[in-house]
Image (cartoon, rainbow, N blue to C red; front, side, top):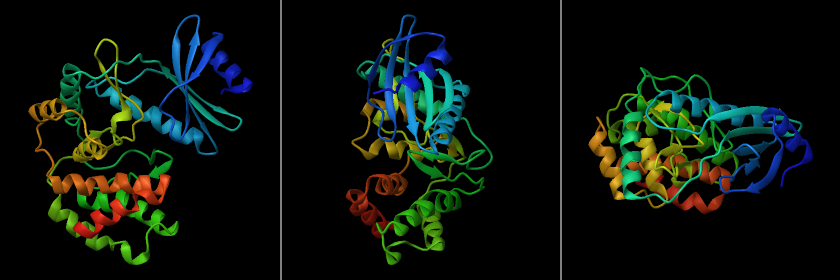
Amino acid sequence: MMSKGLKEHIESLLGLKISSVMSVSGGDISQALKISTSADQFFCKYQAGEEGYAILKAEKVGLAALAGSGKIKTPEVIGLSKTEDGAFLLLEYIESKSKGEKEMIAFGSQLAELHQVMAETYGWETENYIGSLLQKNTRMGGWPGFYTYCRLLPQLELAKRAGLLSEREVPLADRLESRLGEICSASKPSLVHGDLWGGNYLISEDGTPFLIDPSVSYSHPGMDLAMSKLFGGFSASFYEAYQEASRVSFPTPEEIEVYQLYYLLVHLNIFGVSYASSVRSIMKRYF
């Protein structure tokens, strides 16, 4: 569950002896652990491999950006460190509870407020990650171009190289950008979580929403909404609260599908062919 070397490394960082370690959910591409000491509990994410430190560093930066907005909570970062064969990120442990209507209303409102933190261009200071995959963040002034060249094309090329999509199935860049210009609503670049499915937020015991495991950028706010709807969606009260607090129009059903294409491509490239039919269906319908 936890190597002796990793345990000693964390104990040195904390200045505390670890009394117990338990695996918890949240480890699709990494190992997620709840660490208990005599003083407190902590969440540890361990990422093996050469890119482990870079992936977790990007997560730390993303958490800081979201927390720095002052609009929504994230767990406090305790430390980030390299190990012999990877890296670990140590966070405050948030005891969570079931999501009630009151909490989802607060979450919807706070996400809308987060999306009101804006920039002049789409992108981010550096490349970061979505899951284990590199996420390109070249600064660009137009959303159709950014979504084409920094989101869809890199994932389409990965899928093509892996034999998950054929050459003829991948639309040309000009076609993608042109169609996106027709489909996408106007919006200023907004600070987004970037990977907002149901496993990437928590409701603490006192009812406070927390965002975790971000893939941040200044992007179209519809990206967070599209991802939130991909695997069943959040509660109706969440979306109602978001719309009430938001200063931008809610994405159309067509936009939602087009933005979900990015996340389906990511899943295709990480988890394999089970996502291919959904990817093909959206590309055939819109591109």
